[in-house]
Length: 108
Image (cartoon, rainbow, N blue to C red):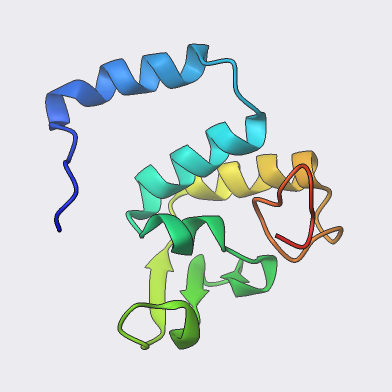
């Protein structure tokens, strides 16, 4: 079953609504992360700090987390690196292995 997509011309409205939304900063950053990286929701939400290669500006998603069971490397843009730095400040890098840790349970 294919999921509906957002037409490109609707992106400015989405970004505007996202900036005004009354949601957790972590949720906003996760949505932006997924828009920038174009990965599946479970892959985006499951991103871990140890998967980030800061020197090479890559996110290495291990094969076991990928649908096709092959490692996937996502290049990280300047905007995404800034988003990661924002998440460091929000989540206290090192407190949880997950970049977008749950507010209720840091093990997820």
